[in-house]
Length: 325
Image (cartoon, rainbow, N blue to C red; front, side, top):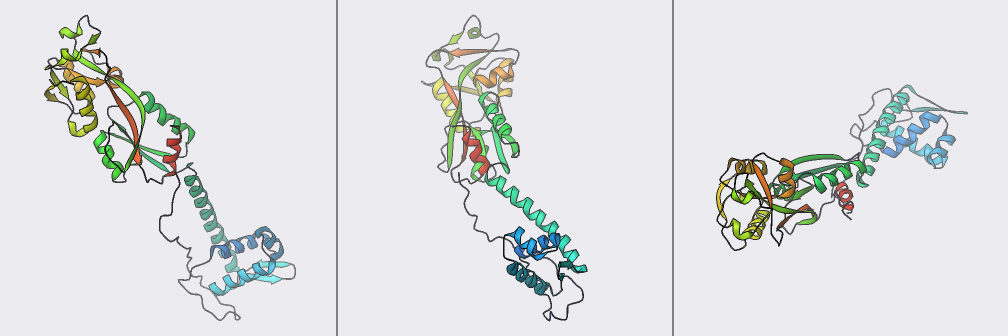
C-alpha cells in the first residue's frame, strides 16, 4: 500500500527575532515574523562547528562562495552579525554563539522527526488501531497479531474488542485501521481476508438427553429446541449464517438472548436452552455443566476475517497485510 499526499502544505520553521545591537553595515532591521530557511540554519550550524568556511563548505558539499552567501543572507535576515571573519577562518559573535545553540537544537529535532517519518512510511513506526471481535480470540487471530508485534516492535498497536457491527462502524468512521470480523460483511468500502475457519458446535446442558452417549447431533434433532443467542445486531452476517446452517429447514426457536459467548454458555449450563457456538471460543471457556457436540455432515462453519478500508494509506497496515501472503 502506498501512502499518497495528504493535500497540506508543509509548515516552515519560524524562530523569534533576536534582539541586540545591529552592525552598522546592516541597515535592514530584522523582520519579526520572518521565516528562517532551514538550509541556512544548517549551513550556519556546520560553520559554527568548523569555524572555517572552506571546511564547512566541504562538509555541506557546496562551494565556499555559496556558503558565504547563505551566511550573509541569514545575517541580513536577523539584522545582526553572527561571525567575525579572520584570515584563518572565523569566530562566532556572542549572538552567533546563541544562534548556533538554538540552531543545533532545532535541527536535531528536525532530524529526529525526519527519521520518525521515514520509519512511518516504511512501516517501522507509526500506530495501528486494531479491534478484535468478541467471538474470536486465540488461535490464528492472536498468532497473527503476535507475529506482527515481533516483526515490527516500533509500531504502536492500539487494541480494543467489540462485536463485528461496531468494528465495521469504527472502520468506516476512520476510528480503526483494521479489525477482525465475522463475515459476511456487506460494505463496498471495506476489503476482507479470511484468517480462520471454525466449526460450529452444539452446546447442551450436561443433563440434556442429546448430551448423553452421543458424539454427533443431526439437524433434525435440534429443530424447535429452545435456543439462546446473542442479539443479531451485534453481527448480522454471522447470526444469519449460523441459523442457515444449523436450522436450514427452520425450527429455530429463540427464547433467550445474552450479550456474549461466555454469558450464552452460562445460560446453557443453567439448563433449558441450547446454543450453536464457534469451537475455539467454546473450548477456551470450558464452562462446567456444558457439553459440546459436533453436528453430522455437512459440518457448519463460520469464518474470521481481517477487514480494513480499501483506500487506507497506513503503512503499518500494509505490513500487517503482508503477513497474510
